[in-house]
Length: 168
Length: 128
Image 1 (cartoon, each protein chain N blue to C red):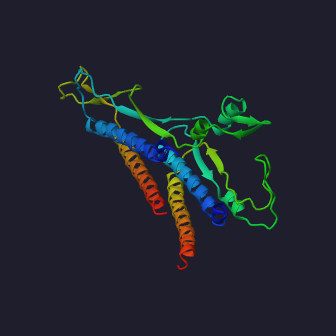
Image 2 (image 1 turned 90 degrees about the vertical axis):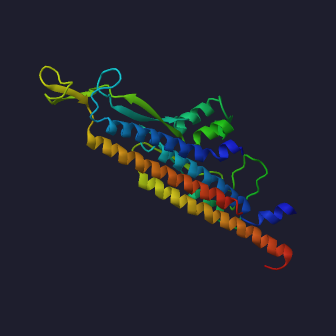
Image 3 (image 1 turned 90 degrees about the horizontal axis):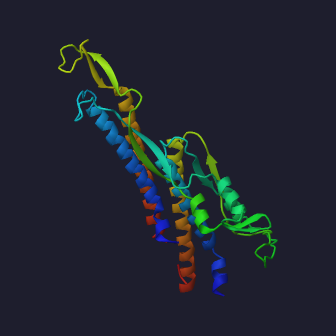
């Protein structure tokens, strides 16, 4: 049992916390810039979007078993898998970490608002504002904060389990 | 001689229970970390069945002098559980409940191991 594996449960939860924090940051930035019509390059603010990606083994168990049966990893005894190599076992039996990937809204980053008095209004009196829906952003905010709390709860549960084990 | 003393306790079995329960906690942590990941396959490990099988005591016991032998009768050996992989939305409630359940289960196993050692210690000292 290596220490690396012993504490991997904390790394999984920590990756969840980090990803949710990034999600929250992007949402906060979108809400703060909901009315920003001018950024450094003169264009309206482009909404930030976050998507989540799983890192680690994403193969399903069957797929990993097939690899083992083909003899690449693990030993095979009369067509049955006698033992999986420990690296293989770690790959199947592990909680996967998560990563937040940030990107910018590509579909339609702006919406037109009729404001003839605005200094940046075009000839027809329309201003280009970032296409941010407050309802969507607030929902994302709730999602991020709830998911963050859930990760903290699991982390605390894992911590108290380890503490408990020290009492043996 | 030493081996037989410990064989009479449940320490071996509980040790495996702890490591499986720790593994299950890792899987649950992964599920919750990936709660918002699209296309994520949730994982879980159930070993209640193999545990109750391992705890069954029968009088008839098959001798195993080769590792390829099948266990017969009481085999008090807990090998592994069933790995469950399911596509679809991760339910936060279910995962949190599983985490809480697993935490209690782990504490119970720790308590039982501690008690086994306490009993042994008591026997060695001659008083409890």
